[in-house]
Image 1 (cartoon, rainbow, N blue to C red):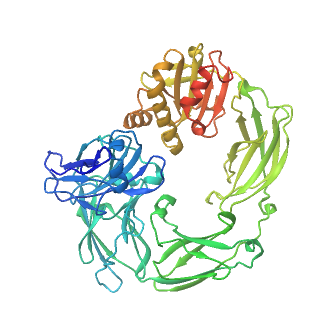
Image 2: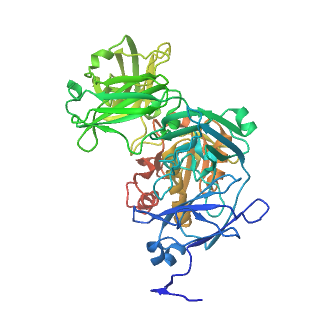
Image 3: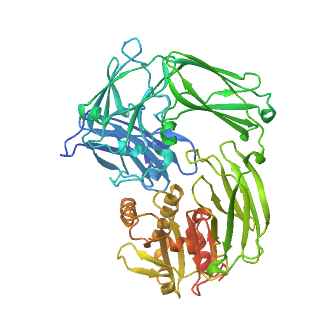
Length: 590
């Protein structure tokens, strides 16, 4: 075999060979693979497959070479000397789609076992009863759902497909990486106006078909019913579209600073996560004082929330205007978006609240400065409505606070700043009965760490912080539902994998989950391979989090052998290994 060398690397050696098999080990020959990668120190996304969707061989093999950059540095990538994050999508008729997420050294070969799927046939016809066929595929080599005229979305999109690494271990997707099924990934065209979607045999929660085809219909969505899932057929008759003309009043006093407005549409009957997948435009429409009008002639009927995000310069927000419109089938609507001046006095209410602030151990935070800020967050507006100093008991009585109606959106809240640091947020709602807000300040550097009792997740036995006295303790509060916590936990595991031998006997790492149930935490730890790198505990009644004044997670504390806090903050503010080593070696405050 001819081998052409580039330096010391053989150019004919692939990055990786994927072998696709079914649950019985037989090759899956009707399948396509699409991949992309990001190299360490480079934000550029490089394609791994060629063509974009690369077909497997008759033996179920997919030879992945990458592009020119990968070929130059293949040995470094495969040996793990050059960090790489890659994503591979696998589409095979009759099987659940697979997303492979991998980071680090690449195996030379990997076997991917595909699981059977439930087939749902989508029969789509337009308002004139003609077969709907936009004949359009997603744009861009990454093959994301943007631009796909048909998607199937779910509030937890990873339930629609299998997510693993190249070793077959289940993976948890960060929110920004999750996406729905789209044409080429889990959905394929079977005939004119007929599409096949490959779904899990049992699908929990609600899934929606969404259709966006510019010039035909935008914003159409419909829930897939259990009966349609059981029958395996979904008949869709598209409605007549409507014409909507929007204009932004840039001459309004509250809008005069703005030099553009970005327009978004959200169906009111879908949650925010699902609305994100209803991608109606190739690019977000932008209006300006020179072009303040937008006409959409192909909008699906229904109830919509329309937003205009007014900005100036790069991304400085001036204001946000939101209106709700009901779009009739085949009708026409004219709507002007006009921001009104922000007047905090409009939100003076009749509610009172006693704010009580304590230090560690229950001591009152006497005479500390406080500030209360009203946030009208949907408009990006805020104003200080009260400030001063707490009394000798660490309390202050707040008056004229605004309460939301019971069924209103949480568009208004208050932030509490104590000693110039934000310590809490609260919202008042009619009938909530809230009369007092108690805040416990977290222990600061040089203060004693409060003794807490938490439940060991493996044994169920109690763990007290006092029992760890004499060792350094790295204490981290987290939860399975917290996105940033996942990166912090993974970083902590990697630090232990690298430095654990040096820390043994000197340092105890204790993670404390504030989840509702022990079982959820145990399953999450096992799924991510985190069971054994630390002592994992559960704060069953929330007392530990209260004792440490936890208002946001993840939050970590480094405690010295004498039981005093030497550092506290966000775990990812600095590499955990660097931070811990600095103190253990005497380079930090002891």
